[in-house]
Length: 230
Image 1 (cartoon, one colour):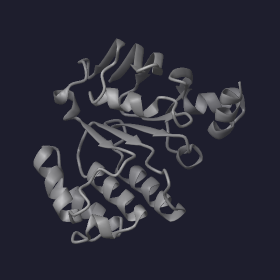
Image 2 (cartoon, rainbow, N blue to C red):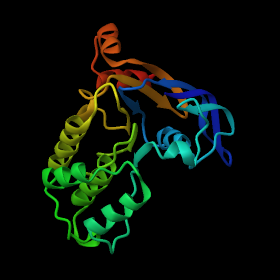
Image 3 (cartoon, rainbow, N blue to C red):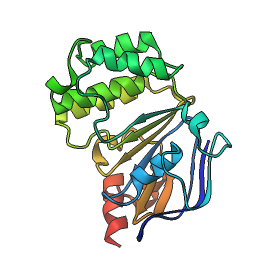
Image 4 (cartoon, helix red, strand yellow):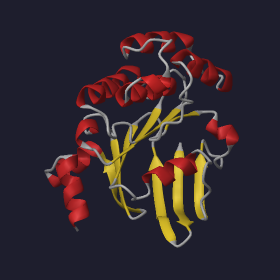
């Protein structure tokens, strides 16, 4: 479904991706793991055609990333991107007007599940609540691919639990492909089917999560410590 082959990306003198080759399997949840600055966000932005690879091949549904392929991808960025003056309902209406796969029934169900109110104003709610709003807007679509960039970063433990619950609850097994980019592995270890560890833009280890745990007799957290210690 998503293929990276020998992908390189520079920002000036900084090499963000270094000969990256990864295949993300359709219908599975993949953890894209690595420390801050390792190239995780750059890889996601290339999938979205927001950045372009300098060399190598990237394919989404067998096509190069473009505005057209982006229509099938729901993206949760790390940064706050919603206009702060909007209410949650206004933000939802805005997204609905852009994406044809918006699902009103999912939105209505999720807003209750997340403990949000449509008339809440974005600039007047807490960081944890804003994280829930981003999750609401991302998961109210029926996109085939979901890219979650540091969804737990800087969020309190109760909100983290709610985010994990939402991912589990709304994931369409075998149909939907989810990539979770994070350096906070412990909370998502039980979610992921496959893992890709990257450092300094390079893939340092990848494979099926359970197999890697069994082969190395380590949790993914322990495995990450070993990988980056080397």
